[in-house]
Image 1 (cartoon, rainbow, N blue to C red):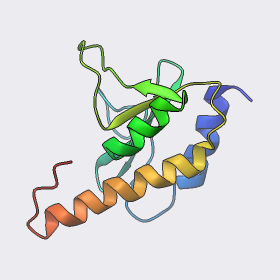
Image 2 (tube, rainbow, N blue to C red; image 1 turned 135 degrees about the vertical axis):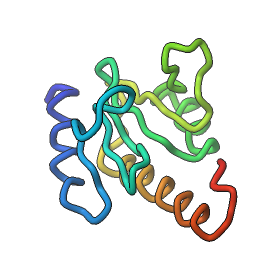
Image 3 (cartoon, one colour; image 1 turned 180 degrees about the vertical axis):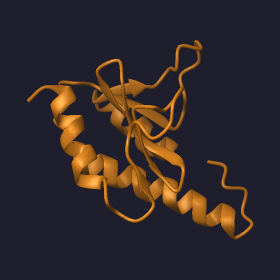
Length: 118
């Protein structure tokens, strides 16, 4: 299956859950993104699945050869964003679930008065 098709399946799997906004609901950066409570957790950029994950998890996946830190064309790779290699054996749905949980937890922490920064 093509990366585009895999992302469409991912969108179908997550759309309809509480707080989830599918791609196309906003313009500009993140227009290809799945969001939870308005915050991006997964998006499709330049043919790759891009996920917001804890820095240590991104480090682990990069070290394992599953992808690279995402660079939004600003010249600086982002520490908590992984661009999954299209040849990676990592399951997209499981990684997206991890990303959803990470972003939702940061949102809850922020709502309780924590910094929400990771």
